[in-house]
Amino acid sequence: MNGQSANEETTGSARADRHLVRIRDGVIEVIVAGEGASIVLLPSLGRGAEDFVPIATRLVAAGFRVLCPQPRGIGASRAPMSGVTLADYAADIATVIEADGNGRAFLVGHAFGNRVARLLATKRSELTRAVALVAANVGRAPSPPHIRAAIRASADPGRPQEERLAALRAAFFAPGNDPRRWLDGWYPEVLAAQRIAGDLTPREEDYAAGSAPVLYLRPEHDPLAHAEDAAEFQRALGSRVTVQVIRGAGHAAIAEQPTAVADALIAYARKLGGA
Image 1 (cartoon, one colour):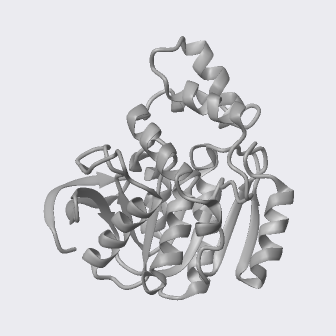
Image 2: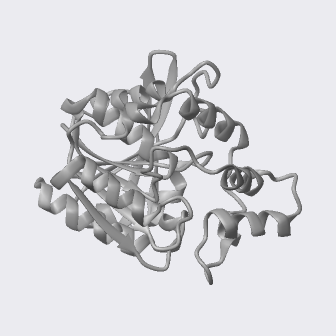
């Protein structure tokens, strides 16, 4: 990867390098591991790349090169967070892919990250091999106000723990799954900036993910991933969309069922070629 090398660490059994990639108005930290066709993992609203460690480890072991960019305001990523739109977040990832120099990438977006992935695929098809949407709202309407409120409460360290756990159960975790693992790992200022950027971007702008093949991993118990929206999404985009249900998961699917998510990504990526 072109850019400044920050350091090395171990992710599971794989060595991971951290690089700093210069963008137009700042720098993006990227965690990189493995060799093979590139898979780029984009995290949820107000959360960082560390959420993907179990999945990234499995992808690397399967023979893929994994890039985990930290969003603006997380880790060593530094760039303006006010006055930006979803296009700025997508441009950050485009620069990361170009700097890595490993050809087109399979873009995987969890929750908010799915909109970044879809917009990047729309604007930069030459950088996109395919797109995977994990726990995505693929409807044409924004998230309901009560779910938005639960997401904000989940991320607010100033609220009582029991209130936050109730919010996590409501917005993120399937019945019977322990939400305590997501009491940590939140960046409220990043969440607020990303929410504004997403709201400034009409959903029609990124809805179709350009013309890329799309894998939609719909969690069984996700309050934002409705079966009827998935069916409409598939009708609208046609045969390039594959829908797969992740059982026993809610909106935090990558934390609840990381093995199932990783295995679905691996199987789909192998069909694309390159590993």
